[in-house]
Length: 71
Image (tube, rainbow, N blue to C red; front, side, top):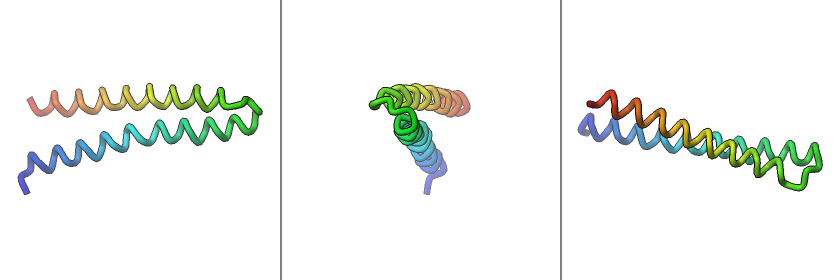
């Protein structure tokens, strides 16, 4: 397999993980905290939004480092 193709496959896998983990953490932690605080879902929404923001930040950092290293 071409090493360049392998690098892009690794990048794709890494992007999937750094997008998925913060969002899932936000969902599960938000639900757990909602149950503890009886907050009717508002904490879950806040943590999902925070997870999305963290995922976007991680995506930006990883792709910037990857493409700056390639050039």
